[in-house]
Image 1 (cartoon, rainbow, N blue to C red):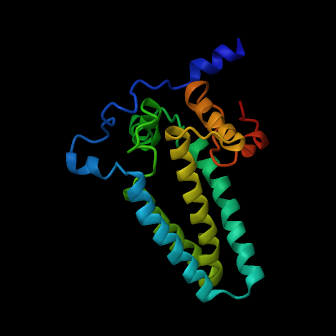
Image 2: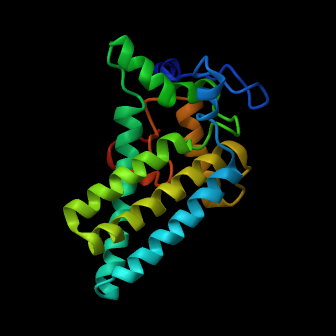
Length: 211
């Protein structure tokens, strides 16, 4: 019986990877900003990540402290990833405007989980948020510490989106990769109330949301 309840809660996909990408906006111009290919993702985020590292090195106040801040930013991302996915992307507010926004951000992905142009965060969302977080980190922690924390945070995001893309588009045959993929696909095909972490499944174990 509990297994049946979990299956009932899952948002089962209706569209396949070879179908046209599900529409988010009626406007073709706006719709283009919701799509992103793997080549565009790599072409933008690899240079930005390298630029962030160069900035960190130029402002570094000691190797040990800088590495520690980068590691701290990475950990912050992994927690942020879980919280964002569980409490924002799966928010059920009962307010039609808020629920429509949640649908635009994430629910549409559950309807068509494996389309190659919709398994990465579009640049129209990721770049403004990255700039906002960068400025906020620098304002709160200063240039040296803020950029080091953000280097880890951005690296975590980069790993997250690549892992998410791979889960939906690659076979992932190695034992570790296969476990990560199986963990995430259960979120889509068994229960959307479990397995919120994508890059670090152990986090779901910590919060008792692992299926």
